[in-house]
Length: 571
Image (cartoon, rainbow, N blue to C red; front, side):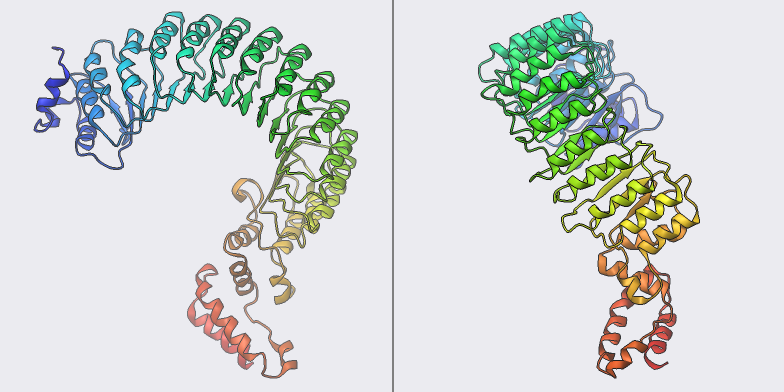
């Protein structure tokens, strides 16, 4: 096939019959939407095959598909996202890149295939498109030569704000090449290098670049799930100290980091310009000694709002040390799941929460928490007026006794808890009854999730009474109308009555109460109102008229409802 230049396509684009220049009707339809400036056609996914033709998939087969696609994408003002999953090595790629270089609308470009020397052909697009803010390489192996080609591309000025190399098998040699090019991209504020094989030398190269850049704009660095050790982290920290805009740092899954590396990290926290807000140290083998090392830095970091220390080896001693350092922070989200602390550590955590705190999420799943630990925790959170999410999942020693102690918190005037997770705790009927009784009077919780194995009709009856006490109309009115999920995710596996009540609760509070009364009281007893003779009759009439629009929710016909009205007023 002869190679065509941009002028060739431009001269024919207006009148060409698209079915004659593409390998499929589907591709012709995509080009038609581009040519006609379809306002909702904003994403294109270039691939080589598809079991079914997705609206956005341009399947490259043969002929000059790519050349024409490049031209129309270059002209488009609607396309915002372009993802390249496949690129042939024998079709008109030069024409595609030539056309793409004219585009001014694409904001995010994703590449999941090695296009070899053609990475360099993206240069004009990178230079000329001031709308481009995100560039992602994912799910293919970046070897050394590929890294050099990408580095050549990144060595040009651009408007990029986000750069992502997730799951690309990136190693130290490859990062050394790419990091050198980042000197020309000081405006980048988000850099993701997670799920690769970056170790010491890669961190040294990246640290040197960040240390040498004047006024780097980096705000988010995700370098989790690599093989970073203490020396690598030390070199990286030297560069991060120069990043005074850094607000989010993710180091999770780097299990080679020990106390020495954490000590280097602590120096970052204590640096004059550190403004870190989010820190992820999940799965970094932190033990009590490591937690103690972190405390000096955390105590000097009042900007920190989110801290993830899950999946480590922190015990009671380490948690006590951390609590002392967090007093000066403004933590809103604290993740401590899968460690090894017990009631002693929770007592110190409770003391932190007795202070004025902004904590909204607390994750304590998979620890050694028992009933005593829950009681210690409640002593602290009962005065917390900000906590919205509490995760206690997979603490197998929690029984009905511990769940009953939560009632003090549920009934507190300060309680604003919305989500409680108790997955993996087989508390049976006794626990269900204790939990349901404790929730009586609570108006904040919307989700209480747990495994329902071991819960029989006795346990479910307690939840049924919580949601709709049918003893009287007044009891029904005072039932819980805020919970929308109990037990399994999306209420899967719940008894039908529970599902029905929760469906009512998804309506507005007053509407839920009306529906439950209509559903549970076919013959509303108004005899108690006779004490006031006919003074309350207008209220009864008004309530019944207000209830009428909700008959569809309870599957009641208009005729049946009219009989209900007559029965209530004239019996």
